[in-house]
Structure formats: C-alpha cells, structure tokens
Image (cartoon, rainbow, N blue to C red; front, side, top):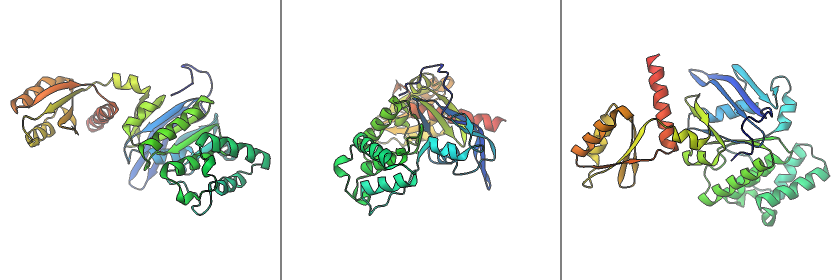
Length: 319
C-alpha cells in the first residue's frame, strides 16, 4: 500500500545511494540504492543473509558505511546526525523493552528518553495506545504480553517522538498469523497519514502487502518495483508435477539434475518447478516419461525471487 502518487515531486524521506559495507572476508552491501517516499510502504525482501539487517543498521546510523551515502529528508547522515535521528523511528528485530515494567511504564521511559514535554507525551501516549489497541492492557508488564502485543508496544515506543519515517527490521518474525495481520494494518494507518515506512521481511508472501518492494540477495538489489507488476513480468515458467505413485524421488532427482530447472519446491502432493522457458518442453517430456501429470501454474513472489537470484548468479559466474 502506498499513498505516494507516481512521479510525486516530494523528496525521499530516507535514501541510500550506492551504499557499500564490508566485514572481514565479505561484502555485506555492494552498492545498494533505495528510497522511501512520504506516504509509502517499501518492503525490503530477502532470505536470511541477504543483507537486510546490515542495510537497515546503515540507514539508521548504527553502523558506518565504507562507500556511498545515506540521506534522511535530503540531508546526509554524516552532516547532521542529530537531525536525522529526530526524523527516524527504528524497531530492530529484538526490541529491548523492560519486561518487568508495564506498558505505561515502558512508554513513559521512552518518552523521557526522547525528551518529550508532559503535554506532548500525554497526547502521544493516548494516540498510540488507541491505534495499537493496547489501552485495556496499559498496566500489564511487557514480559507478560503476547508476541503480537509486544511488537505493537515496541512500535508505539519507536513512534513517541513523531518521526517522519519508520524503519522496522522483520517486525512480524515470531508472531502468530492474526498478530501479523494486525501489525500490517497498523503500518497501513501510518502510511495513510503520510509517514514513510521501510519494513524488512524474509516472508515472500508479505511482499504483496507493500506498495513497492526492493529484493535483496547477497548484498545486492535484484530488482525493485510494484509487487504485482514484478511477478507478472517473471520470465521463467512454473510447472507443477504430480507423481503417479507415492514415490516422488524419481521426479525430484530428474528436476534437481536438469540444467534448465531454476528451483524445486514441494507444493502439497505436487512438486513445483521453476523452469527456463527454453527448457519447458524438455522438462515436460522428462516428467511425463516418469509417469507424472504436469500442469502450468501462475508464478508467485517466491518464484520471482528464485528466478532473479539465479540469473544474477549466472551473470556473476560469466563475468
């Protein structure tokens, strides 16, 4: 979801320009660029190890970068770090709430940390407890909250100082499906109010919830754009095969060894194979020879990711 109109002249609230970050023996970020506009929900999507957390830590000033530039509301981090921090709300994967303090006490602590006046804190507390639906539990210890409630309290604490852009690192990790929906509904409300939101996730199904996505792999951007359009433009073909018996081992072996098969995943009683278009007929014939029933399926976001990652890998090997 995004309320930012195409071609909107508003400058990005948060921007990375060709950011590079190296650790001993590995380049964690290799020239990454992205931008978050006002009223936009940008998803940073990729599996564990793709570089999502490193990028978020670079964007929020928690680690230095080796090359490139990070800007907050058009101003480089290095030039005005104090101003940048005021514009940012950040929720890491493991947000450090005080478990023995109540919801109210945690909010009060972070209010003092941000230097809010009593009047500002009172107004923000009421607003955030209402929007997160935590009013009735305001006196409950944070350590006694469910995973979803804990995440919502963490978001509330990160928003106390009225940041213009909110950055969340895998906010739905470890919470139940209902709580995941509640967290996303909360983010939509912030976006509707004009806030820029950057959220990282390893869950490919969550990509469709974003107005725009940036796919990250091996510290590099694979592609970015509107989720539906990206999936629609997926080049590779998805075939689903059902074995004629309960033994799927021959099908697995054939698909895993075929050079034209990009990825293989189980799909209930079927096997889902992502196949290069030039090899579709050969793969179909090979599966049929093994007695499998084969149908074409619609690509999803996970298929798109595997397709792009495989192509990027082949390009790197050929270079």
